[in-house]
Amino acid sequence: MTTKNIFFSICIFAFSLSRAQTLADAIRMTDNEQFESAARVYEKLIAAEPANGMDYYHYGENYFRNDMPDKAKDMYQKGIDVNPGDPINYVGLGKILYTQGNSAGANDNFFKAKTISKSKSAEVLMGIADVYINSDLKNVKEAITLLNQAIGLEPKNPDIYTLLGDAYLEQNDGNTAILEYEKALDIDKKFTKAILREGKLYSRAKNYNLALDYYNKAILIDSTFAPAFRERAELRFRAGQSERAAADYQKYLKLNDNTSARIRYAEFKFVSKDYKTSIAEIQDIQKKDTSDVNLFRLLGYAYYEMGKYPEGLSNMEKFFSKAEKTGKKLIESDYEYLGKNQMKAGKDSLGTINLLKAIQMDTSKTDLYGDIATGCMKAKNYSCAIGNLEKKIALAKGQGGANDYYNLGRAYYFSKDYVKADTSFAQLILLQPSLPYGYLWRARCNIEFDKDSKKGLAAPFYEKFIETVGTDVEKNKKDLIDACVCIGYTNMLNKNYTKAKETYTKLKEIDPDNVIAKKALADPHLK
Image 1 (cartoon, one colour):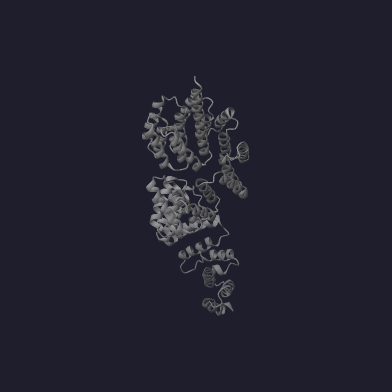
Image 2: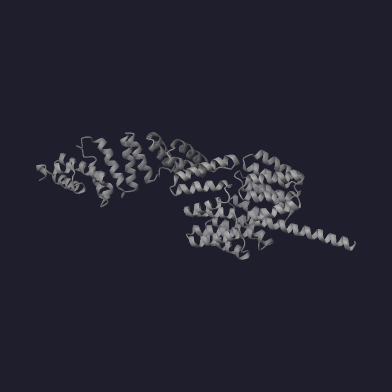
């Protein structure tokens, strides 16, 4: 070989090596959630080699991980267009179809990828397995089969064992998951992705101290590994260490100084119930870029929690409009917050429809029946309120909260079903005996059973109401007046003049100009 040819071969080798490292660096940026930085690298890679399907695939993965499925789909399709003989982008296209619920179309693409690669590509097998593990429609058994095939092709690839650990974790087999993560670490002791997964496993098992150890270990190995700081921040937040959690998130932001990281920070502040900071962060992002549909979702949530319902509804409506245009997948909390904001805006019918959608998507959201009932009460549709409250209480296996029985009792009362109303308020008293309103409403129900007050049915409940109100007179003045009038009149009828005088004297103290009190105290029997 001539010197010139040797030099040329060395250059080609150096270029290939450099390029492979650059692709590896871009993938690492994606793993590190540095999506925008990774995108810039992928653009350069594609410009240098426009027919390299693998670059398009990983660029698509970068978009997918950044919750941009439309852009991911475009990138996978471009990869197929420039190199239809490369199987990997069929996996990406299949992933999009699978997450959209088109499993038949997805499997066609997966079959094509396996056929082209003759099932000899570990990356193809891993990509399909990843979809089966992490999508809503899971096929973990098939994922495990595919990953074991991939191990046969690349037994020293730690990513395969890490993904296999994820598969077993989806089956709630934590012990086997740990064994697979440890196999990844046997291959590469500094493989931070596997260490992070172990930390998340222990966090999921609520072994927070051990989870923290793994996050610390990952950070010690690689102080630029941003996901470890994010996971540690969220762990510390759950442990009530708000300041340390915020410090970790600030480190995460410094490592990922991009829009995606800032959105995740805004989400963290929302979960932390720091709604004001969450909103401020989003508004700052939107000064430069309003394209991310998730920002409107988060604003709609946060404004609702702050009690700013018009702003909440406006942003939820924008979110739904943009989501429809972009094919953004909607989740139960989207319908929940849209419905709640609509309820607060007086759009009770629309609010009810959307809250019911949220319940259909997540049957554990039984509290939403209470929100629907509140809207029904506002509309004076008491049968609707009763139906939803009884459903909520029944789904809680009869263990409704005090507020449920309070609202149910009022709905029955205004429906003039005083017996059931009285039963509901009795249950309220059992749950909250120190709360005055159960006694007040039982008194009102018993007035309906004893219109002429001869039986004195309401008086004992009014007495208990006065007792539980204590010194909080001004707030309850009108109801205290009604209570004293009823108790006084009942005692007058029963010729219990001492008790009557005591009650009317109290009534005059509460309301010095009260005509009934003055007239009663002037009665000779009370002198």
